[in-house]
Amino acid sequence: MPTVLILGAGSDIAVALARRYAAAGFTLQLAGRNPEQLRPLEQDLRIRHRIAATVHAFDALDFASHAGFYRTLPAPPDVVLCVFGYLGSQEKGQENWQEASRILHTNFTGAVSILNVVAEDMAARGKGTIIGISSVAGDRGRMSNYLYGSAKAGFTTYLSGLRNRLWHSGVHVMTVEPGFVATQMTEHLALPALLTAQPDEVAKDIFKAAERKKNVLYTKWFWRYIMMIIKNVPEPIFKKKKL
Ligand SMILES: NC(=O)c1ccc[n+]([C@@H]2O[C@H](COP(=O)([O-])OP(=O)(O)OC[C@H]3O[C@@H](n4cnc5c(N)ncnc54)[C@H](OP(=O)(O)O)[C@@H]3O)[C@@H](O)[C@H]2O)c1
Image (cartoon, protein in one colour):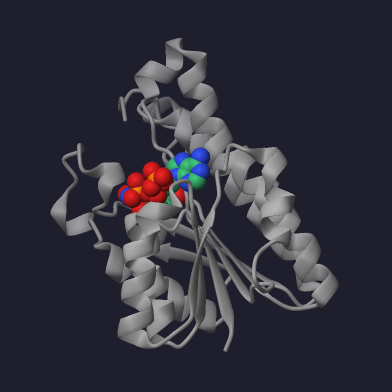
């Protein structure tokens, strides 16, 4: 059975993805900062889907540990889902470097650090799939979240380059750009219901798109068109909008 490694497995989108991949018979490697919190999910997936699952400690900000973490997994994964992220506070980050650095390093540097390790292994094996969860926030800088947005923009560009490089080695890289999703990350925000997806809808889209080897997935689908419009608003108008 193929194996999927989920980085940031405690996230609401990751839990929905774990259920999808388990239902499809994948062996699961669940990695997160607090492995004990992942145990109930591991047990539930094992019983419900009769699949093998393991739990691993992983901190995106502990860059030095990434190579060792990957090397000690029970098996090299066929699919790696990079799901962790940190929205943080734009306002706090403007005046507090610790907050800004946490936003930048979790969403960009941490993802690059672990995926560099994964990429070398998959390139050597000549197979595999890397799926990175970026965000539509990376498509254009807005005054309300440009720290998070710029980190995700960097991640989107990293994934694009990685895809171009690894295609020559038989490895597929998919970029996922969710719009609003109802998760712990956004529970303090008043999201417009019509534009907001549930984690399970996002997981379904990702699973299907990965099977079809899509390069870039916007989820829900209409975000591709929303972002096309937003990206094309002239800067003199955009900066007056206070978005
Ligand atoms: N929700 C949205 O509207 C939305 C939109 C676009 C993109 N996204 C992206 O979707 C992904 C999943 O987010 P979500 O909405 O499911 O949010 P979530 O439930 O808040 O999950 C965020 C996850 O990231 C993990 N994490 C944070 N810092 C970490 C670190 N240093 N090391 C390891 N894990 C760390 C958290 O781990 P703990 O469990 O240990 O706290 C948590 O499991 C993120 O990349 C997010 O940026 C979300």
